[in-house]
Image (cartoon, rainbow, N blue to C red; front, side):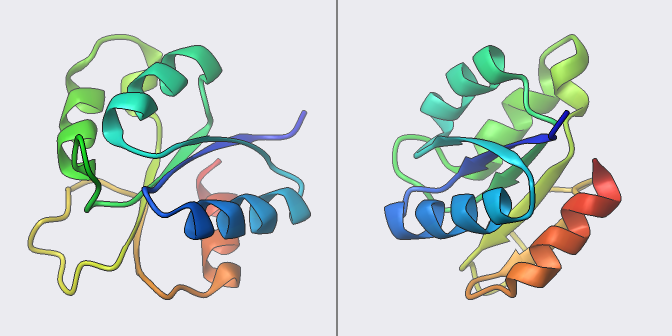
Length: 117
């Protein structure tokens, strides 16, 4: 069965591109455009890994990440790959499987996902 990846980013172009890259590499996908929507999608879809932008409207990726790690159950340990245009990691979160800056290399995304799912 294909692994499922939740793509969280407020930029529709980035989401579309990442979904395309992931599907072309055999992954199932689901998507959310901010941290609030992402929490609902997470509960419904139960992905194997999350790609997370940090700077988004409604709820930043860092806040979503903190909520994810505080909740109980199996979803709190879902691996997270940060993909962000933030110029530095000072606002990033700890204990993620990787941190890629935008623009990113799709091969790096796939490599990190394959190593962590």
